[in-house]
Length: 327
Ligand SMILES: Cc1cc2nc3c(=O)[nH]c(=O)nc-3n(C[C@H](O)[C@H](O)[C@H](O)COP(=O)(O)OP(=O)(O)OC[C@H]3O[C@@H](n4cnc5c(N)ncnc54)[C@H](O)[C@@H]3O)c2cc1C
Image (cartoon, rainbow, N blue to C red):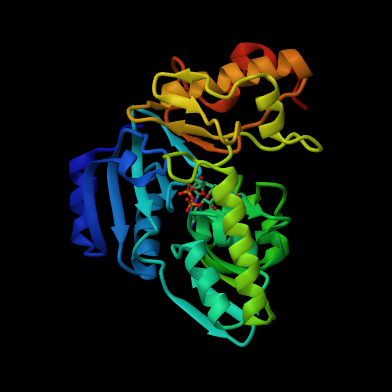
């Protein structure tokens, strides 16, 4: 389907819910600094605005995509023919009640960590070094330093394409390692309540400091990237097996396997999505050849479903023949 840009933009602007842009380059909204234009890009100012847009795109049967901070996605160089809805402005409210934090899904995890620290609440220290929004973290069950969102989420307010706005319990989100029911269900996270425990401020600060130090030492935080490219093939670590095949420094165009951490691909300037894809394919093929391990991507692909190197992960990998051993 092709989004009829003019009428869609006119209709969205008439709702007066926030900024509406045509052809906004998504490279401006991803930590990789990669990605072609969105047909229509909307930044609603309020939660109601987000819901209004979602209801409308659903009613019009238009393709849509929610973007948080864009720190876990690889967007096609051809862009996205959809209404891209950003949570960056409209889902920003935070309230602390006793040991619970209720937050809009557009709030940055790092900001929530600082709020928890001020309120002397412990449990969220693992997230201090994870960029991105609460919404993205819920979808990905983001985690680090031995913990993950599954351990702190109490309930989530979602927009459900079928049932409308409703609250779901954390158990219904079915969190697993870097995945959740959000990936297979027409849900958009609007708000979430995090359940923390009373803690000692100095201990919370010390844990956060240690986690941030570790991150700075072990990951290329200063260069454009999208975090871990592949999930860990438990019990192994993706970074270790990729390093072991000698991939550090491999490059395709300006996309380079980081010298600091082999499971990170960094953009040295003008990298395109197809460069990253080619590098991923090369890494995956070689890891399979040497170790018989099939690496699964952690980053999410946003773009056309078929054609050339820009295709879904499944087509991409299965076209190689390598993925045929996947369960
Ligand atoms: C330097 C670096 C380090 C990182 N380290 C870690 C780490 O240690 N652990 C870890 O788990 N991740 C890590 N990541 C990956 C990333 O930061 C997390 O996955 C983060 O939670 C993604 O949030 P986001 O707002 O950027 O999501 P986006 O990248 O914008 O979106 C990710 C997915 O979530 C969907 N989405 C976003 N918001 C919503 C919403 N409100 N409702 C429904 N769907 C939504 C999007 O459609 C997309 O499919 C790292 C990334 C970088 C760049």
